[in-house]
Image 1: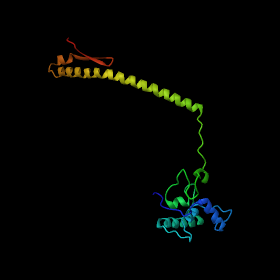
Image 2: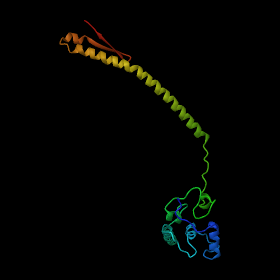
Image 3: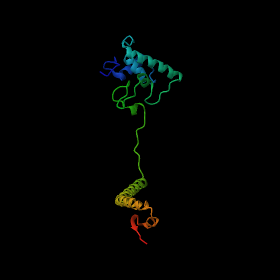
Image 4: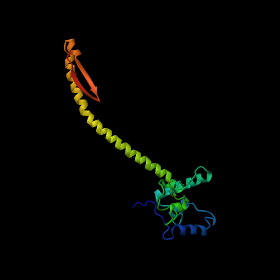
Length: 196
């Protein structure tokens, strides 16, 4: 259902098609055949025509790109070659189009496999030290939060005492307003009225 470009190779496959092109002297024995040429030839009928309109559009793009590649206007690198550009979709990582079954992209495109990276013991120790420091900082932060939670009710009490002391400051008698004194001790406030 998802296959738009049907081939006409029957059971010979791309390897048999390449051998057939070499036998007919369409490709030299030592010449490497571009996979876009194989893809295009696989969709031609016996007379060399492509009957499907969608496939013929891709075949025209392949011809244009091969011509540009010959002139040096199009440069292919790795998986971004003529066939990928003509089809307009990226290569699947499990197979290579236009080559045949059981050919992996790493083998065909000669891309290096990802190597394992070794991590030094010093780097591991550094990460462990940083995680221990993070744990201690989190514990200190929790301790400070709990201390702050204990101080907030005292601050609320102090603000209500300050409101009460401000009532005395509104009195006209200067002697009484001078007798109100606030004493601060260790972050708490006690309001005292001192009489002379």
